[in-house]
Length: 165
Image (cartoon, rainbow, N blue to C red; front, side, top):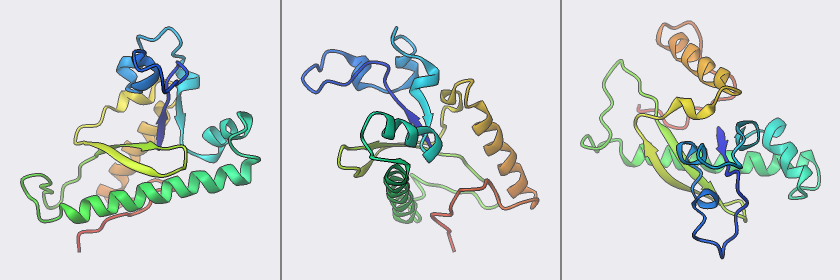
């Protein structure tokens, strides 16, 4: 999972500063405070976990890992529910036999660590990973080819959240 962060500090009472409220990378690129290395992160213990400890959000890496795992569990549950709900809705979700699609799902994580789905992108913008994390997309594409040709089971750490049996 990618975490796209703002380069400008969020302040709830300042709704005029769109850089603090819109984390879309295309918009963030215009912000003079946006630094890819700081604002485009991986939602895992090594990347986000260290930030959560450093800024005092979590007492240590074990607490950060619990929070991160809890958020990922919620994302997986929401994603599974989404695809189960649209399984028979062919006007919206039209899987083609023996084909695959990549979707980009955008979530928001609240202060209380609850997760909400914002939108689903049928054509995700893979360049949002930036140059530092481009290996993430390269690994995803390699794993997709491996799965398609029966060479492997996918990317380590990914979970099946929906299977159309």
